[in-house]
Length: 152
Image (cartoon, rainbow, N blue to C red; front, top):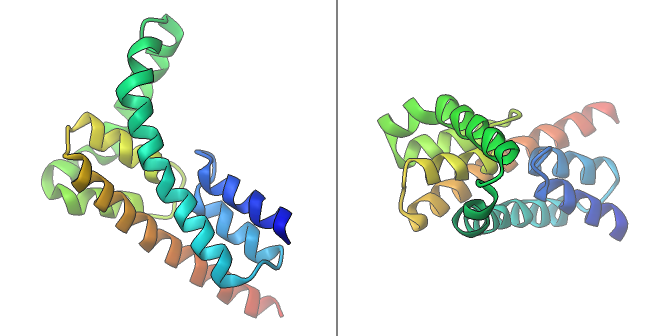
């Protein structure tokens, strides 16, 4: 059980899954439904400060490399294109809505990059991302619990 919880947390930290994958994984492995929700939610929230540190300090040095710069520009344009109109129009609520959608490419990684590119205040961006992660986690958690009940 501990191993499955750790794997669920790692999925929640991963840009390839976030809590959208961590929560269902933990629930399907039989981890306590409340523990898996809290652990995956908090792990996903931890991504925001880690990404902000990366964008503020490490990104400056890596952008000097051509391959990294091309990749960073591509990711930045994608984040701006996917969320740009929502953020410019709705600001705080735009980030919440963008991060809340439980689909690939709409989580806290893209939300943090978008907030960074649009120069949102860090506290405001953190709050928007956290609310979006919470709502997305609730959607995934409830949907997974209902699907598990349907299977049984």
